[in-house]
Image 1 (spheres, rainbow, N blue to C red):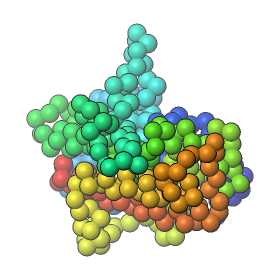
Image 2 (cartoon, rainbow, N blue to C red):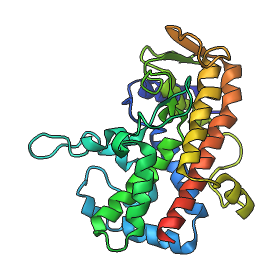
Image 3 (tube, rainbow, N blue to C red):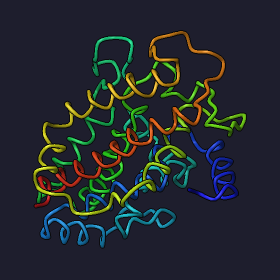
Length: 286
């Protein structure tokens, strides 16, 4: 159990985090570490060799020399500006999510127009990494984006929502903690996955081949639908008394029993993200 003072401090920080972040550092880093524990030795070497060229990204304020740094690079660079004061990476803002309406049939078409969504960018990054003729800078950038975006896809509120900016517009209480600006997205970004990751045996380990094959089955489209379904069945249903499409109150409350029930859900999403990232890295670099 996290010490109360640490948890309070952490929740205070979460309440003021940027809306577009997902899983913050701990979740993204854990997914990346799981992936590195499950790729082939050849892929692990290839990843490290590409990250050794991270200076090509020209983002000294946002290093990506280790897998942990690489996993949060895409969030770190969001505020960076060029010499003229223009956003350097503003074009990638929509690449972090693809929130499809959880109260309508699954359809990524509206949110993935022109490939500006997380699943389309994952496919694009894999293709760039597989292209040995692509410029080194492009391949390094594709790698750090891929590591981050697979994590984003497995945060359910980056896959489905109620037209509420991925739950950012839904004020929420997490047990007894209710900072004024805390919201449903904050819950699934921070305290819930942090508790999930630290509950039970470490998620960062080499998984049996059969388990990797089962979790890694399908492709990005299948994983998108699955994450969207989790948003419906778990995120919104738990917050709205069992009916994911019920009217949303001014503030939702997740009590201790609900949080405990959601811990294994969040834990599984992190595990899925890590194993599937390993699969994609092996496909791209193995």
